[in-house]
Image (cartoon, rainbow, N blue to C red):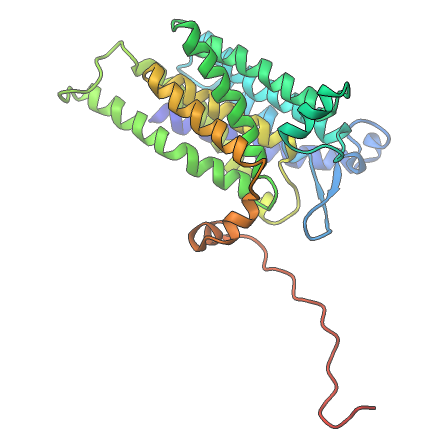
Length: 320
C-alpha cells in the first residue's frame, strides 16, 4: 500500500509542477516560433473557447517519470510502464499536432489505408499497436504466445478507449479512474489475503509480485491524471490524444500485468475490443447524456452549461 501511495503522490506532484512549468515557458518570448509555442498547442473546445493541449505531453512525461521512480518495480516492468506511457504519448502528440479531422475512427483510418492514403491517425494506430506488443511481451514475459498477444490487445485497446472519452472536460480521467479502481482494489485485497494466510488466497511467490507491480503502475498513472483533473474540469487544458492514449496504455498495461490467467486476459481484451468497436456505431456522448447516473458523474465538477443567448423580450403591449 505504501508503494502505491508513493507512486500516486510522485505522479501527482510531477504532473502539477510540469504543467505549470510548461505553460509558463510556452507563453514566454523564448518559446515563440518553436515547438513549444503556446499557439501551436491551442485548440477550441466544445464551447468554442481556447484550451491548451500541453496537458497531454506533460501527463505522459509525469507518468513515465513516476514509473521510473516508483519503488518495488522490476527493471522489466519499469521499462514496460515507461514504454506504454511515453510511447503512446509520443504517437498521440504526433496526431495532436499534425492530424486532421478528414478521417475519424479506426474504420475511417483503415479505409483510407486500403485506398493508399496514410493518415496521421493510421500512423498512431500502428504505433500504439507496436507499443501494445512491446508492453504485452514485457508484462507477460513468462507466459505463452497467446498471453502476450492478448496483453498487447489490452494495452492498445485501452489506449484508444480512454481517448474515445476525451470529448468533454474531465470525462477521460473520470472514466479511466472508475474503470481501473475495481481491478486495483481486487489486487490489493488478494495481496493482503495472501499475506494474512487466508485459505484459498494465492501463495506467496505466485502472482503477488505482478499484482503489486500492476497496482504501482496504475497508481503512478492515476495520480498524475487526477492531479490534472482540476485544470481539465476548469476547461483551461485537455489531455488530447497524447494524454488520453498515454493514460489508457499505462492502465491497460497494469490490467494485463495483473491478470491471473489467460482467461482473465481474454476477458479484458474482449471487453476493451467491444468498447472500441461500439464507438464506430454509437455516440458515447449520447449514451452518457441518456443515463442519469452516468450523466451525473460526467457533469460533476464541470462548469455549468452556457445560458442560451436569448434576446430580451419586450413588455406586454409595447410592440414598439
